[in-house]
Each structure stands twice: as structure tokens, then as C-alpha cells.
Length: 155
Image (cartoon, rainbow, N blue to C red; front, side, top):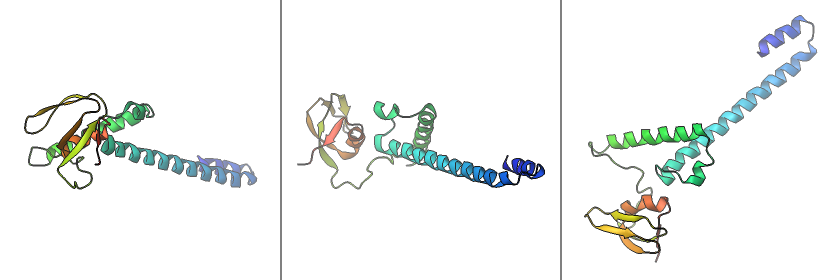
């Protein structure tokens, strides 16, 4: 405690130490503020990952996170899912879709890797194979685009 050090230095007649004790204390407070700011920035970036990649993080992103960050991401993911379920009159509403207003409801996409069967609202099942192209509803594709399974084909 800097106050105890300050008092003991004064009591022992070592007033020359008081300035260095105060300087050390100020440095410790500054370092604490810097570390807190760094951790808060990292937390904001991890939160943004949920909106960018969805509920499943790519392995290369997860690799660079410590256990506490993965746990925080998981808790944030659960809280966001709970909030989205509470919207829309009991049916839920996915607020992570359509991050930008769509210009059209359907888009042309190319499959970047084999994904398997994909069902759209009308019950049609589409086989997503590597290099296949499809014309699908935007809102059904957006999550797969973020995950790197599909890419939007700009004609």
C-alpha cells in the first residue's frame, strides 16, 4: 500500500523516498488502466466476432483465444440467443441476419466447399457441393456466407 510506504518513509526520516514511492504508485495505476483498456478492447472484438461469424467460431480464431475468452464468448452467445428467442411474439427473431439492408431477396451464390443438403422455406432441398451455383433467398444464405461455405456471386 503506497500510503503505508509513504508513512513509514516519513517516520524513518527518509523523505527522499517519498517521490519515488509516489512515482511507482502512479506507474502502477497507469499500467492497470492500460491493461483494463486492452482487455475491454479485446472483449469488444470478441463480441463483434459473434456478429461476424455467427455462433460457431472458425478454428483459427478460436486458437488465438484463452479459455476465459472462449467462456465469455459462449456466455454472450447464449445471452444473445435467449434475447432473440424472446422477440417476435414467441417465435423468435434472428437479429444477426441482414446486417445491411438487402437490394434483392434472392442472390446468386457459389458453394466453396461440400456442405451437404440445405433446405429452404418451401421444403426444397438443395445439395451444396463445391463449385455449384444456386439462386437462393438471401436470409437463408447469409450465415453460410459468413462461415465461408458460400460466396455471393456478383454478376
